Length: 129
Image (cartoon, rainbow, N blue to C red; front, side, top):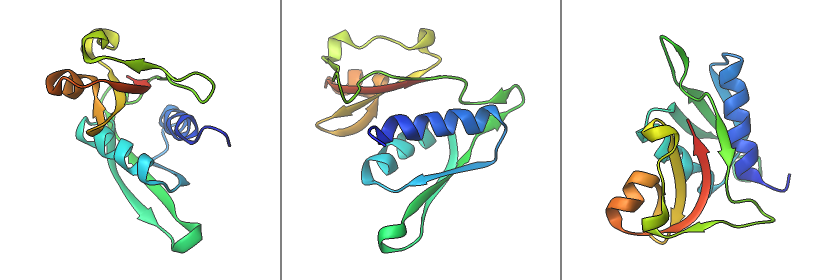
């Protein structure tokens, strides 16, 4: 696996498309920070670390509403082969404000709205809607 973030978001998208209650993937601090942002914005119901030492993994409980899954689409912006950086003034809305752009900034992992409010830019990780 060369891109663990892309693997994580695609697993969550595929699990929500097939109406799975939860999904599991390998543990990392970056993934936990990303999941914290997604939980605050309602895309994920809850998450938790499982396992010990080398065999640690993250279990994520996906969020659904009456119309279906909250996660209907994902798009990886910055890839291992091409990094994409944005200044705070260059950040645009995703799906007319219905989606999120997750950005890695010097102040931590943020959404596009939080980054614009804090006037910081960074590496655009992925879009989710």
